[in-house]
Amino acid sequence: AQRVTQPEKLLSVFKGAPVELKCNYSYSGSPELFWYVQYSRQRLQLLLRHISRESIKGFTADLNKGETSFHLKKPFAQEEDSAMYYCALQNTGGFKTIFGAGTRLFVKA
Amino acid sequence: EAEVAQSPRYKITEKSQAVAFWCDPISGHATLYWYRQILGQGPELLVQFQDESVVDDSQLPKDRFSAERLKGVDSTLKIQPAELGDSAMYLCASSLGQRETQYFGPGTRLLVL
Image 1 (cartoon, helix red, strand yellow):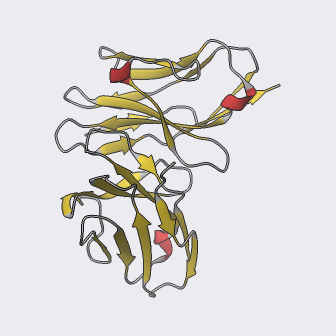
Image 2 (image 1 turned 90 degrees about the vertical axis):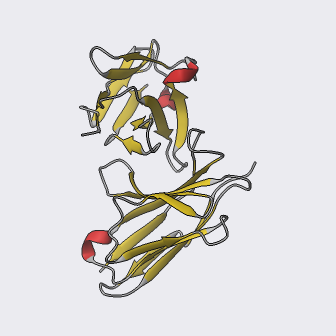
């Protein structure tokens, strides 16, 4: 079964501290993986996708096929990073996107 | 900047009534998605269109839900009859193609009483 698991519902860190949002997936093939973000009172939007290998707003994510993980990391959290973060998987067959339950990140001053 | 539009933004209805949601994707986007997001969960795909054709509706409760995209542009999602468990946020998204970035609308929050 295809599944995305985000084990933390809430993550609270201090400004300037490193942050890591965990994502594990279950998929038999080679999926495409994404991180989406939803800031307060804004729409859900794409943050980054693994094939782009970009750093967006200081965030990076590395696909670890051995551990089936795609954790999101940032070395120094900022208050404006406070938001809801969703990890998502797109299967390579029908291109269906499956989302995790989300992690709320709260960056304290 | 072009955005996905949805209406209404909020809908309160009684169980057994019919409700309909409308989505206008970004112009030129061939792929359109309807998601349901229950409080505390991530979005769940209900139906995916490529132009006017359904490419995935495996999670759509077809006994009560229907979706159409007749001219391959805007789309309507209907629930008839609504049940208490249908209370959720209904999100529409669109993309240029099936592997392209999805752009989300603001959602329609449905409350069934």
